[in-house]
Image (cartoon, rainbow, N blue to C red; front, side, top):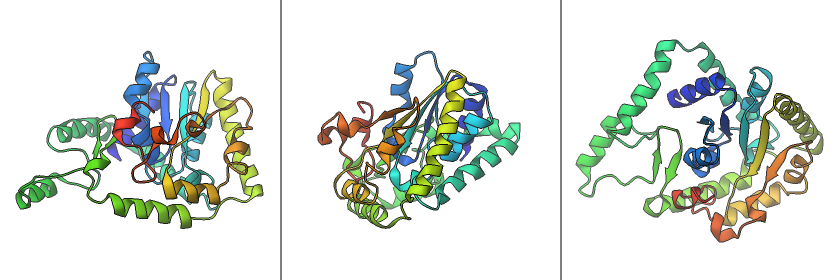
Amino acid sequence: LGLWTSEFAFARAHPDAVLLMGDSRVQMGIDPRAVSAAFPSRAVCQLAVPSTSPLLLLKHFARETDFRGEVLCGVNPLFIFEQSRQLELPIGRRIQQAQTESWIARWEHPLRAWLQARVVLLRSDLSISSVFKTLRQSRNGLSMYLRIREDRHGEADFAHDPSLKERLRGAQEQAETFGQPADPAQMDRILDELQTDVTAIQQRGGRVTFIAMPSSGVVRIAEQQRYPAEAYWKRLSTLTKVNCIDPAAEFPASALHCADGAHLDQSVAWEF
């Protein structure tokens, strides 16, 4: 949360920045270093948050700031086009907390991240004490499949993930059962809000690009069955002056393979 708060504050202070929004698929699939290479004169802020919808965050920068930069917004239909829109709420709480945080706390976040990155791989579910405990108990040391860098990018190494099969089953269950797809009337409301937000950013000289984040195998099949492109993705692409990129329409499935069904490995994230 601290790293996100720092990125959020930095983004608000740099209205011409490039903002990466979405869920864990964006955090692990769109490398800020690669984006920086494409936009060398712009700051790049990784604002993706696992298991959330980015729509409220997009609305914040469209309506409550003078943002005029680039937004790369990853689209996971399970979260963005879900009927209850409950996954927008965690972002709202983060925004509220970030806006009321003291300046001392804002200085502490990057310092803590700098120190942790040099002692232990940054993992939200690990503490330094738990790492040393694991190391003491294992002759082979600690095997980690995910490293969160100081820029909040998640470097996944699924080849060394002992729980990969369980993750794939979990991703499949989520794709098959999570929430309810928005009905046509609800989709109209979502698209109307998005059009308002995209237009506000465009009128200030900015640009919004939606990216259909890759998924694979049984996860992709379940997503396509519950959220057919004709009813969801293609309707999103009808928004006025909005950029929509579907990598699956341009690249072979092998180039977008997600070992756990839902996330890109670091070995292909840069190329993606």
